[in-house]
Structure formats: C-alpha cells, structure tokens
Image: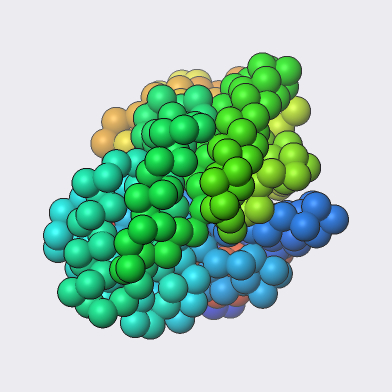
Length: 367
C-alpha cells in the first residue's frame, strides 16, 4: 500500500499526483439521489462494491437505506465482511474448493450469498457449506440478454431452483437477472427495449416458480444506466447499481444519461508544455484504463486528452487554452470501476480542500 498522496486540510492543488479524487458534495448528492429515486418504488438498493471497493462507502450507502452490498469476487466479500457489512451477495459464479471454503467461512460473520447457473456449482457449494456447518444462500442467475452467464429463463431456471431447494445445506434466495450489456446502449429506446426483455424473462421465471410452490424472495439486477426501469417494473426487488455514486465519461455518452453528478476524478499534473499546442500530464495507462476511451477534462474547455502511454497523457490545446506547467487538472475517467482499482486511497475534497482519506480496501481483490 502506497502512502497517502495528501493530508486533511491541504488545498487540492497541493495533492500529489496522479491521485484518485472524490468530490464529496457531488458524491453525497448521488447517494441521496439514488435513495430518493428508489424510495417510492419499494425496491431496495444492493449497491455494487466492484465499483467503490470500500467498506466506508458501503456503510454510507447502507445509512441511506441500502439492504447490503453485492460483489463479483470472494476477496471483495471478505473485505466487506471484515469491515462489518452484514449482508453480501456474490453476483457471480465461483468455482474452486478453496474459494468456496472461504465463502462458506465468511457466513460465520456475515450473510454471504452466491449465484449459480449449473448443478455442478450447486453440489460444490453444498459440500463447502456442509464442511463449514453453515447453510449458504444461493441465487440462480438467468440469462436475460447478456449472453455471458446464466441459465435460460423459465423451465431451465425452475429445474435448477428445485435442485437447490432439495439440498439441506442451501437456501434458495432468488434469481439474478442482470442485463449488463444494456447499460451503455446509447439510444434510450433501444436501451428500454433490452430491459423490457429482461423484465419479461424475470417475470415469467418468477411466475413459473410460483406455480411450482417456490417463493422467489429476491429478483436482483439492474445497473446505473437502467435502474429506474427495473425499479418501476414491479418484478425486481433489488437494484445492483454501483457507478451511480461516481459516474464516468462513458455513462455521460448515453442519451438520457443517468441523473447523477460526476464525483470521481483522477487528479493529474501538467508536467510539460514544451511542444506547441500540447500539454503532457502525469496520468497515462497506469493511472486510468482506456477500454472505454480517453478521459475528459473537467471544467477546462479547450483541453482534449488524445493519447496515453504508460506514464504520460497527451492533451491538445484548442482556442488559445494553455495550462501552466505544474498546474493540476481534474480528469473524468472513461470507466470508473477499473480506475478505482488502480489506487490505494480516495482523496475526499470539499470546496477545494482535502477533508478525508479513505483506503481502497478491496483494491486488487480478484480471487
């Protein structure tokens, strides 16, 4: 773990860079906005830790009504459980006896569930639960259009639920119905159509389970790009949005972008202005991923980030803009989740001053 790049009370321009900057006013406004949006629907938030990787942020979300957190990896669940988060769902399939033994052991301090799409996974989880003397909550993932993981909705899902329900070591918790590929469909009509299909698949599966006498406590899914539609459906009980707390440049490209403010930035320093029309900052590939494109410059018209190497970011200067060498710039990352995973610390700022430092406790938690 690297030493913090700042101290409380320090001015933003004094923060060492590259640094992961969190605008606390915008961040808190996003948490409040999600809570307000979900309140009239009766749908609960199970915020996604893969975005923020922080028990501190998880607690702030739960203070505003979130029922728990979801994660993608057992290692992320461990960090949350050790950090006192009582209700966690691994929204992913986990394979391997060592990982499942770790997950089962966590159920001694938190309620930690898991998703499956195969009978072999069910058998392995049941064996881990029996060995640990704990019952584990299991959700069936259904493929609602992502074509990544999940059994087919309807009869295939029902059969797998029945198999889980027959195990004395497992608890059937519900279905996972996340349409991840819909989150960044740019056109609102196409995005809504993809989610209509997901809602229909989930509704049909829940009804077929009911016909077999099987209650479905949780229908989980939805992301920042589509949560309002799932929350209003009357089918989903839990929303698994994560990026809403921070936002990023890729979500901003959606038509009808989500109603949240940009709160997460990479603070970078202008390290060279030697080439006419160009500024170079100390934030390149190692500071931010570029899988969703290059970052945007926040509040600085005339500056365009156009290229990255390992440690350098190239900015073109337009319309007479010319930042000073040594000046600090806020970059809006294109993809917030993997950006967070590159840093050890959040530097929380309010009105230009550092207010807090929070560890990115689950950084690198890939196992």
